[in-house]
Length: 221
Image 1 (spheres, rainbow, N blue to C red):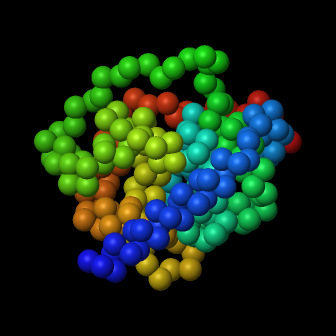
Image 2 (cartoon, rainbow, N blue to C red):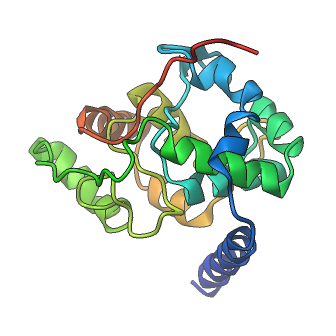
C-alpha cells in the first residue's frame, strides 16, 4: 500500500510540474495551423486506420482539450507513452510547438463563442453500468464523458471504440519497449478489467455523443 501511494504521489507531482510548465507557454491557434503537417496525414482523414500495435482508427483530436493534447504529447516525448511513430513525432516538437498544436486542435471545428450543449447521456446496460462504476470512470471523465474534472484528462465520449480499446489495453502492458502507457493511476483502474470488459466499455463510450470529430484536411502540404 505504501509503495502504491508513493507511486501515485510521484505521478501527481510530475503531472502538476508538467502542467505548471505548460501553463507558462501560451499556444497560438494560427501558429498551430502552420505546424500540423505531421498530424493531418492521420488525424485529418476520416476513417484512417493505424496498423500498430493492431489495426484501429486513429483518435479524433479536433475538439479535445488543449491541456490534454499537450500532456499526451509530452508523455510521448518522455517515453511514458511508447507508440514509436507518435514518440518520434513528439520528440521533434518544441514546447512552443506542442502548445500551438494543442491550441489549434482544441479549437478546430468549434464555433467561436459556442459552449458545449447539455446532453442526455445514453443509458448504459446494467452490465456496462456496473463496469463504469467499478472504476468510477465518470468521477474523472465527467458524467457525460465530455467534461472531465480537469482539462488534462481526455474527453472520451464519442471517441472511436477500437482506439479506446487499444488505449485502455496499453495501460495494462508492462515491460514492452514499444507498446504501453506508464500512467500508474490508469494502470490501476484498467487492471481491474478483462479485455472483454474493456471492449464493452470502449463500445459504450464510443456510442455516447461527444465533442470530438474528424475534420477532413482541405489539402496536404
